[in-house]
Amino acid sequence: MIVVIASTLWAFEARILRAQALTLKNRDFVLAAKVAGESTRRIVFGELMPNMISRIAAAFVLVFYIAILVSAGLEFLGFGDLQKPSWGVALYWATVNSSVLQGEWWSFVFPGLAIGVTVLGLTLVLAGIDEVSNPRLRAEHARRRRLRRAVT
Image (cartoon, rainbow, N blue to C red; front, top):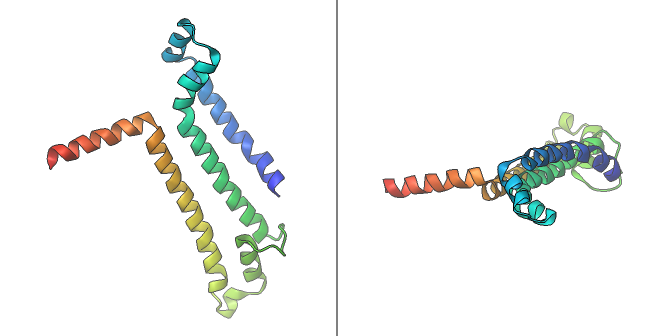
């Protein structure tokens, strides 16, 4: 299942990262580095990567939590290893055993909450990484901090 999920999810994010790299390649600061005689390695790691780190982190976290959701969904449908304990398998057995009809709400609520909290946590981590690594958000955060100091 890992091979199938990994082979299908990487292409979408790779296209987005490639498109961003191609747009950054034609920006003035990259052209100025080329004219200044900087090496390709220096241009990639000194000019392009700092501007792409936010998107790379976003791609990693996005693919990671989509993989969690796809894995849980496939296991819920019965396509996973039903002998291995996981959130999707727990939801599968809760459905098969008609836990909802018997009033056993805990057998499907807790695995569902675990999946939801994990995805929410990864999304908040992504927001934090984006705020730290995105120059536009750093400037906005600094502006808000100056405004708060001026008010107080």
